[in-house]
Each structure stands twice: as structure tokens, then as C-alpha cells.
Length: 357
Image (cartoon, rainbow, N blue to C red):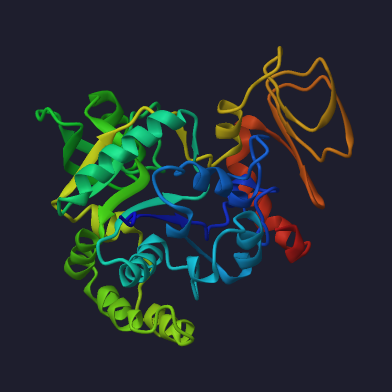
């Protein structure tokens, strides 16, 4: 029997908060951030071994990342690398992939995952995904993985769920995308909310129904384009479809508005690895709490993140609480507590030349 489990990996973002490693030409999902020997997108694909066959993995990215994607996931065919005409946030990206998958398998059961997250508890993750897939296979539902919040972060969606049922799949009562700090603090204090981990599970009919209900213009655009998918006319059809797609996230466009949203509570060692701080938190540390990836000599140095080229010897003396990061032709030295300034650095660096960003 054919396996109808499919994986959509979203890999089109740039991730400027992780500069100087994440660049327009080489974003963070294509880097081995934690020094594991595999890049983030390779780890994401590998995570689904035994759940989804390789021929059912689809990567949505930008045309400029086609070759990097092909190099890092060489088993993908060109039909499995979906190139967006422009960045329009996650709803069009997911819509394109789902309508393309439907043409291949109208019974598809789909997982959507960002390319740049890390999962430290892989077996538990697979268990949670299988719970969600089993439920979504036979129900018209939109399922997300819920992560217990550890801080009042305004960059995540927050889910309030009904805990009265005995199943592992909980009904969502409210879905609030990126609240302000006051709300986030209130959600955290209540203990009734989990983070939306940005990993979604649904069957093809459930997500199509949601697009028709909440993003009808987008649904119509992809329904028309779908006739040309897997043909030489796909690119032109997609260009036309994207002109009708507004820029909106799947969270704002669908998840906040739908009433058939469910959550699977997941203790999976999750991080979206969005910042240098998250790299520090999720990496092994030496005896003085440094995270080191490179050829480094340290003296009286502690609580630092140091990521430098392997061929270069780096000597650091008397440094505490800093990021030292070098990639290609940029070296950044910045206090860990000031990492919110990285976006400002990127803006200013661009005036020195596009190649630096």
C-alpha cells in the first residue's frame, strides 16, 4: 500500500537575526549551526525517516536556493523542490505545496515543518507526529504541536486548549498569534497556554476547506494553477497565482480563524533557533560555559558563543558574555545581551556592500 504521508519543509526565509552566518545568499537553514555534522534542513528531513518516504518530501524555497537545496538533499527531484516566485509569508507557501501534493495523492496526510527548528528529543517528536497523523487522517481537523512556554516571548503564537478530554489531541479554544508583552506575560502566568511550535498536521481536504473558507482568493488561484502542476507550464501558472496571493501567515490567515484546530502537547526539546541566545541555550558548553565551534584558544573567557572557521586559530583572552562569530568575510563581536542589535548591524553592513548581508 502506498504511503500517503507527506512532508512540506518551509525553507525560504533568510533569518537575519543569525547574521553573519545567515545571509541572503546562504540562510541559516543551510548551515550546520550546532556543529552536528548536518545542516538544519538535513536534520529536519532526517527526522521524518520511517514516517514519510523520501519521495514524499517537498521543500518550498526561493529560486536562489535551488542549488543549495539540491546539494544538501540530493535525493529530491525537481518536482519536489518548489520555487516561490516571491516571498509572501507562510500561507501562499503552504497553499502551493498542498495543492501540488493533492495532484499527486488526493488522500494525502501532510506535515508542515520549518527547515530551521531543532528538536532535541527525536523519538518523542516522532511519537507526537504519529499521534497527530493518526488523528488527522480520518478527521477534518488542523493540528499543531504545542510547546510549554518558558518565557513571555512575543515572537510566538499562544494556544489555549480544552484539557477536559482524555485523548492526546486537545481541542483549541483560542489561538493568539504574536501577542504583545503584557498579554504574553499573562498567558505565561496562567499556565493555560502553550506555544504554537509552527509544525502543522492535516489531511488535504481539511486544509483545502480552510483555504476556501478563509483565503478564498488564494484557494481559487491555486485551484487554477494546479491544472499546470507537474508540467512545463507550472512556473507561468504559479507566477499568475502568486499575483493573486496577499502576504499573510498561515497563523493569521487560517489558524486564528478556524474552529477545527487541535493541539498535541509536545515535550520534544524544541527551539526555533532564531537567535544567538537560542544557539547558546541549546549547545553543549565547556567547563567555563562557553559554546565553541572552531579552532580556539581561550584564556579567562566564560559564557561566550564562539563560532569561527575551522582553518583559523582564534585566541581570546578575558572575555565574558560575548558572541564571537565569523563567516565568510564578516566577523561580529557583540555582547550576548545586545543581540537584538544584530538587525541594526545588518542594515548598516549593507551600506558597505550587498555581499556582507
